[in-house]
Length: 483
Image (cartoon, rainbow, N blue to C red):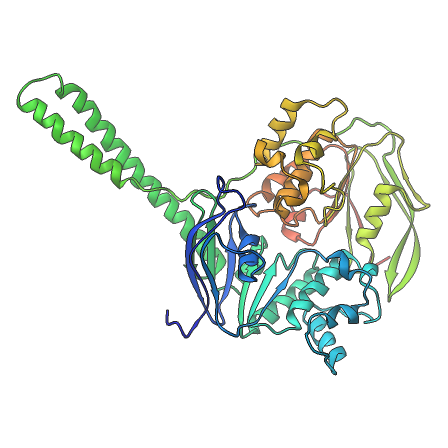
């Protein structure tokens, strides 16, 4: 690849937070201008770390991350920072530029059009929903028209229209895009290459081609390497058996044993390190609290239509085994409704006495970020049991070392798995899921869908991932856009 076309290069880069647990080890790769690449790897492997090295937020321990001179970078983060929430939307976008823009309102409107979003620029960030903030974060990066656009889980909280508009924009975007996402269909629609992080070797392997083709290549490579190693192991064992037999003989037989030892050494040297696929979580069950009476009744809700609060009379009742799916466009008030249900904040919503409520919040605000992951699990148990906590955590790839870290230091994917581990220990009677696929590695999703589908308590689900929703048996639906 000619140097004139390279916009980003990692040159033997090594990075770690803890020298005994490296994240990246002597990683080298180059990206050409105008390429569209996804970073692929398991939760906690270092995908977001690569973004921070590109933006210079982190410094490598050794080696270099080299960005072409003069190339601008913008990143669409996953979560809106608190420092912006008191700002109006106009004030927020002003911070994207060093100099005042006289046509700022038009630039904002154009950027919001990309994600199919229209809103008053005088509205405060704090008064927008999670899905609306996801659009604002994306638009904030897009308005800068960077040479390198970094997208971290850009489809989280976006509805189908938002994902469609973003996909169309990225296909036409004539600059470099690097994306972290677990949305297979979104990635496959516009990427032309993959950087695959191997969590075991801390290396990055670079592939050309669309996302699904690369997945097939990786799986084929694993199969080839496993077949080669299996044959070598068989040869090695055959020779070792002969060595044991000939070693006790004399003369030429002993020489033959020596020759076979050399062949065994050659085969052992030729063994290849098989690229290991992302680990998947173990099959799990969310035990349900036994509850014979009505678990939840909803008689009145508030939604947002044309930026106005509208109250609606409804009649929804959930008992053991009922599953309610709530749908509607971003900004109509789905997350607000779920929060009010969980906290019984609104007249017209009643949760049965003594019902334990488990809540997957799309921004993980239900977790105490200053608490260790172990304490976050322990708090779910009436009678703490260390052995049960460690055993449950291990099913979600949260080892003893991870459990000693503060929740705030975990990757977004690990936070998501921590929430599911909490459900297992909590044994809830009502399960509230607000975008439960957000931040979760696609390899885990079939296992999570199976556990949710087998959950026996009452459940409320909000999700913009249709392939996930299809796996869940729903018996009640509420379309907020049609009431």
